[in-house]
Length: 360
Image (cartoon, rainbow, N blue to C red; front, side, top):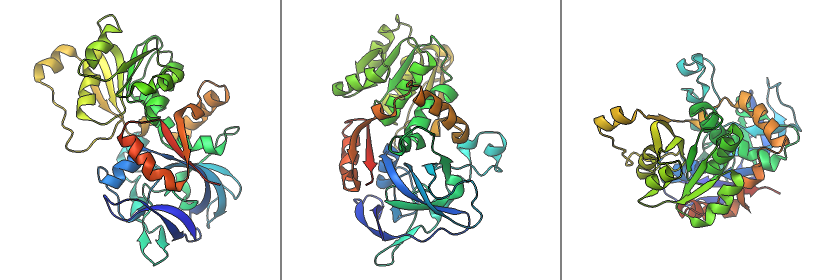
């Protein structure tokens, strides 16, 4: 038996309880978790904004050490450090054939599997494939990537979602060029990663926008050159900071209609807005036809940073080892499994950056 955070039903509180985890079968790997990040997507799963089979063990951003491997697994071995990849590409669906592995049609099929059982025999699903809110997990071998050398596993956990998403939003979706101006809306874990990525890309002016004045120091440490507390005049405030033109690129990390619209309004004529935040179906964003023509702006969705984790992790590792990307700067709280519900509350209240579950 191991301890895990279980979502018994959509809208129900998480339960920290013992679960029975099977040994890995063919093509599977058992991993002892070092750490798991608490992502807004976990909150979206718990409240039904995103849907997966329940009851489930949540958590999708994590890293740990291989304990044992099933038949046919050769690319990892017991003792190896690994990063969990919650969205593995199948390699043969239409998006994968186009090289768009982040849109793989089969990436989340594993979430329907039976992952473990509670003490009373209730069957549990693996959240977003990897069930990282647990002391140990069993995953498909293609859900694992080698942990970068020289990076502590507790820090490497953040690479599994927040960092890849923020990095990819800047370098793959928005394709920020040196000297361009950038605004980042939402200074949580993903927003902080996005700010660092924009700084590494060579952005000149980097504006961080958040509802909380208390996050300014976090934002500036990550690379923000300007800070705006969100209000009804946010778009005008951002435009004033860029000579009245607006930024070249806006990255929205919140997933709310008003924030998406404000991000779009904050860009220059011909500017680019990338939406990373995951919003509900009730979040309707409206535009009229004339403004779409006149402003010539681009609005794009961004899934998992439009990243190819196998290719992007080595690049990120070099920046981390060189001190250009600071994983620790994303973390504002280190907690146990019991601290996850409070971390959800903090996210809802717009407090802090990334909360990180650290396992003994």
